[in-house]
Length: 275
Picture 1 (cartoon, rainbow, N blue to C red):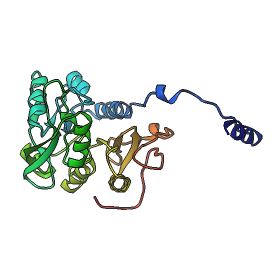
Picture 2 (cartoon, rainbow, N blue to C red):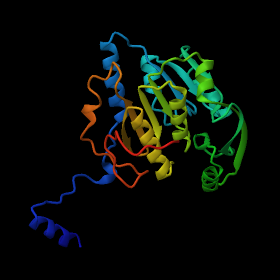
Picture 3 (cartoon, rainbow, N blue to C red):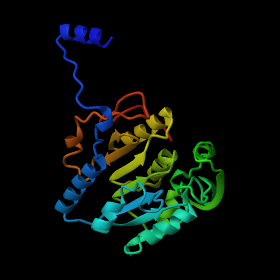
Picture 4 (cartoon, rainbow, N blue to C red):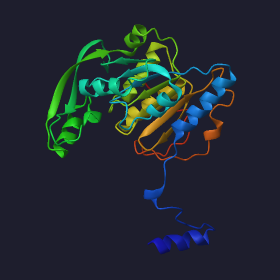
């Protein structure tokens, strides 16, 4: 079959070649490129201060894209983690960064208390706090895989509005989200708060296709350009004083997203939706 396809394409003037085995193809670090571009333009504008919010910070080390920036540049910001065991390690792992603020809470639609599900920890089992979620079924699948049970934790809950008011936040440069399937809801909460970052970095791999589309449409309506790489998305807001060259350097990258049937490049438009 491959030979037949190749012959047909050759007759049409096309050549099929395998550029690199897929397993060895590195993913482009779009977040790093965007942050570098944003930092450069902030410095040119006479402001080098960065303020961030990280939701789902876990222990501050495991699979954490923010840690290198915090340790290198000593960015100011808030780190939010609902799991008490992960939160204790988070605070300890950043004990040398006094400019940081911490919240042992879940971001939710309402203030108060909410239930967080997590694989139950036991001796001899790796710590699975990274898999904690509001989605009990998803946590149950992971727990079965590791031969453990689902643990139900009652944790404090804060809305984005309450979080920002508590810390007196009026502007944000970057929001990092890893909320195991709740990421799009948190993006929508920021939209409702009226305080939008220049950059969102969040996970889309756990989102159903319809919620994925609605989230991207919302961001597009708010003036963001969006690119997906693997399970993650980077949204870079346009139209501010820092956006003289709006995301043009990233046009041309063609990056597959497993969360949608259509490969996405740098999206900027779509049908309107509500999250």
